[in-house]
Length: 402
Image (cartoon, rainbow, N blue to C red; front, side):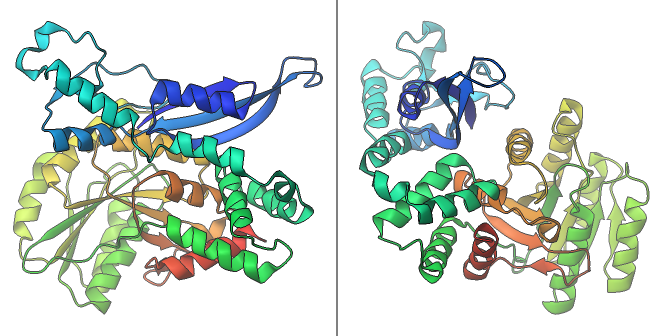
């Protein structure tokens, strides 16, 4: 995903900048208003800021439909976020270098694909502009909706999503003074945002599930909880493998869990050993792979993680995030880890340590990575929940409206 920030005197002008620069597939991640210039924040001119992103995989989808071929391109200019290193030839400027040879599609195909991209009716930016024009301003400024808006902002729900929620309530004629109506509508909205896909052991062959993420998010404890769930409750043959030889006592911690549960535990000191270990446990239903916590700022650590995951040939890669992490730090973690390993699940830990669920909702709304589990404490195996859209939505809604 390519992510950039835009400033303009009004939200509408900022949105037009987004559309012009990132195209109709852009997704709004964050909006805010502020004053620029003046003295001590006074007398400054009002400004709007939008953070937006575009998933370059959308171009891949169009390419597959049309039979276009992907070509390597230089890394695009970025701010603090990592960008994908490959784009499609169809997204190249009109003057495509002749050195691309057979990878250069015909000019007619290029124009046809560009027209298709520009005419997509699912344009989020176009929808935003349309919706802004249709909002009932009087209802939006009413005392009831103002109270709901303040609660959502307090919960750190991003500005753009707050407006989407309030506008949705107004369009469906929800009475903001009736808590039951508001709660029911918001439960339905949050349920619709959820993407859920818990892992399950495969039948008749070994399934490898890897857990990655920054330091201190609870990967090892989460892995032990899952091992207990699948081995003791679902009666599956489970093995645990740890590559975390950096953290003091991390290996001993997992071995202790394994001894209590009667589950074998192996230590992979290097990526070369993981193949031998997986071969040793080829008859297991599930192999859970614990990796060392990695800093999203360290290219060397992420490269080491990339090599290890590649050797493991993991069937699923779960990014473990703490619910106490700041929203923009979460975005950066997803972008950095996602640039080196193919993340296909997320696990949230420490939901019991925060009263703010806005960042959780923001990520569910803005990213297409499904949630596999969430943890509400450190007790093994009890404090691990299998996500269910209705109950999780009720939990989030209760926090948002508190």
